Length: 347
Image 1 (cartoon, rainbow, N blue to C red):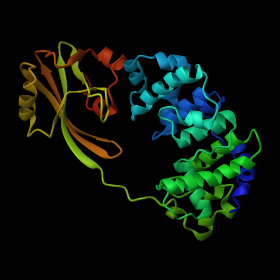
Image 2 (image 1 turned 135 degrees about the vertical axis):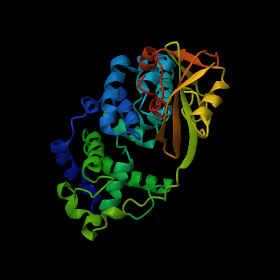
Image 3 (image 1 turned 120 degrees about the horizontal axis):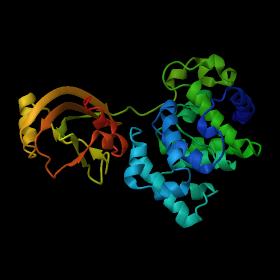
Image 4 (image 1 turned 90 degrees about the horizontal axis):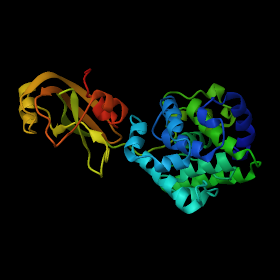
């Protein structure tokens, strides 16, 4: 395909077929930046309520900068990849310190902010400031490699750089005022037509007549990726300890998976049965424990799978090794990751 035709083909299609998404209602950098960070590893429909709730409480960069860490984590609860939220706040602090609170307007400055990589920098640069900077994510790589039948491995940094440079030349030739739309059109095509799972909707594609993969019937072969490693399996016994109308939680370590978040008490491995689970839990000093229920749950991270025996006990003591919170506090204030929240019984 002649890639110089991309703007002429995609922009009219996007004007008619674009989804009405809340972060497309304006070009405010804070809004676009926030949405792009939230959308990493997360489906659009899942992000919508988080985006609205986040902006309602933290409407600007100053509010994000000043938000208490625990509250920020609560606003992010359930989205996963919590380092994204920490980096958002760190970047808000950088914007204040380095740019007097005004979001930077050059690609290099945007790229230098915490948590912002090439893709997000390209998205904000083009959508908000009409700069000739493409945003190359999985959707765009899929579209590009299919229309060009590019069989290089897109997991290789050098390949991504070359594709980005190729698209940057197209952006430089694109009319002023249209570059942000081109970015969104490429994203939209990959998300809704040239889809990642299942057969692409080639009959709806504005590029179908010049797509090299479609012409050869090899759409499913692109993009070429490295073989994924098998997930590591980890087994835990996770406890809901209930005492005096309160539930035991504790903070996770400051580093590592789910760093600094709240968690339910847990132990490595699975118990031999309920009595074994009770005996192990009583070593925490919870007094006499009354077993209530035990059930299995699984939670999948990117590279790890947690297999959990979720044990609910009623106990008679509240040892200081835990923080004890009410159900109301757990719902309103305590950021409990999904991996642990799914272990909670219906109290």
